Length: 367
Image (cartoon, rainbow, N blue to C red; front, side):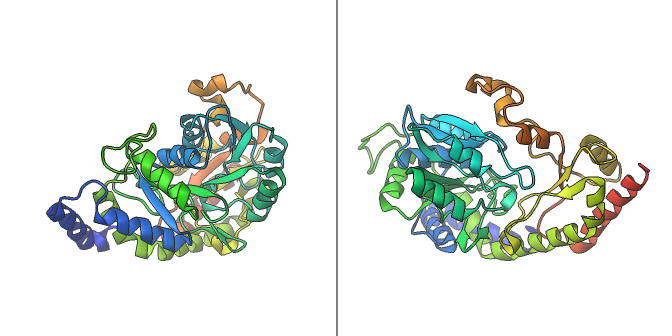
């Protein structure tokens, strides 16, 4: 994926070195505007990581100490950390077993007078139902703050990830569909006041140099990383289409295994799913467990992953959230039953077929 762009990367980095604008430089401003425009919102504010984008974005949306923020148990721990760093208490809820996305019925049931926001995680590259989110927000007066770290330009029901709620957080970790050469993140919003607040918070709480009006932090998207992202952004839609095509081929070739308890996570978004990850679910009806399949594939030099092996509420550092084992049965079940298959731009349908053939042959040996 990167090889054809090497000359452009080198030129972009050289321009930054020539200008010397390493902090909040020209490329940062250009990328903030370009990514916001591509997504369909007015404002983008680059920060140092996706985790900071959640924390600072929630603060800018008015979340403060004593507030509750609803978060799915089936997510990367950064979602929980971001809520905590914003001063809130994360209230976890279960996920849908077929998609891995937040269970919105459970989320609505968890709303209390202290609930300030709900953080839907557009997991694996699939957007959480915009219609249901907006219904819940309107009925209860809670803010929608989207965790779109895995959903760059994903869409569903006419909404692009990041356009449903008051604001959204994205990550540009190198493995993302749009990844930098290091850490990076952005907060997107239609609200100019939210954008201005994040700009201040990311820069020591200073709306202008040496005037610190609030308790901020140092969290700025590096200019060199923004330069890399500016090179890659024009290719993102093509890369997303490539991923979606490979996912459709996975779906087609793996369909005969459904009767044996091996089923891809359900896609409710059609072509709007951008498949940051392609996740297979092995239920208790499968003839072998997830770890055995992963090991057998590795023996054939096919790498896999697990996203995620431990739910947030059972992570040792977060047991103080107070949720016992068994609190979120779907999230806990998925942790032992899911497997991420190879997925990246340029994977190609031939390699998808190789993976699926290997899985079929491994299953066949199980009788």
